[in-house]
Length: 338
Image (tube, rainbow, N blue to C red; front, side, top):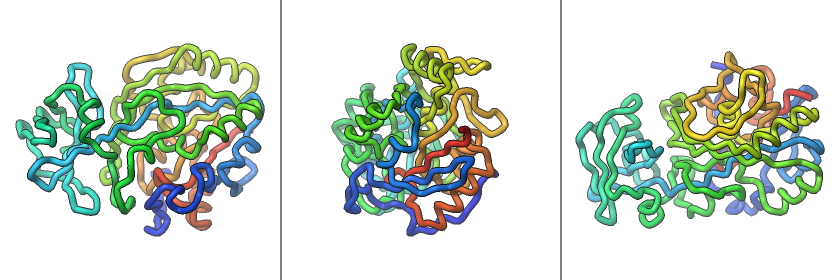
């Protein structure tokens, strides 16, 4: 385990910053670099980056991927579509305030859903948590648009509208959970960054359902790295600029499209890449991300970018200075390279 710490419950962001009297881009920004750990606001980002740097952003939008099971205290989370029309799903207990793991799911069981729909579990996919399932009707995104709601975990105290789970970069809906590192960006801040000479390279990676209890490794997810974005990244590296990923999803997409020498090519399909400190990164020079819970598998990816020592210092400072965690919390900019 690279990083472990105790997260006080009061540091778990229970609502978006807008509900706390802030703008989206008004959250705090912890910056970790060779020069130490510094504290800023997210609106300081144009002053913290250099002309010629590129921000790699995920354009995936968030599905309202949670649906109540009719007549039972259960919730179904739609995670990832498979090429044959089936889906990976997770069945969870509805506790009233949140959801919890449900261990009694079994192959062959059918769950009735609102709108005269159903899902039948076919076979286990991972550790009794995710299942390969056959949905009826087959157009799941259209069904979710009518009957779904955003996935919500225990620290978010009340239901929020789907708009709270979208980023300014979202162009194609497909993620079960928000690529939340991009949430603090606003149109105005993007304009300021462009005016400061920072470029953007869009990629797409549709995220599946996370595992807040089991901390499983990422499983295969759909990606699209356009040729134009690959060119921007390669030119940035050739010109001495820094490639800074916005979120772990952007790291996974970009590194999946990278050759051993670090050159990025266009890529579309599925990635099963797991980025760890042993594997390292070939393209990414920095990472703009949220704060992840103790023992989360994402911390291995962060350590691959920042190195374990810098990451430990950043998380110790975040706890000490009472930053807020999770998708509605504060941000962290890791810049291990000058």
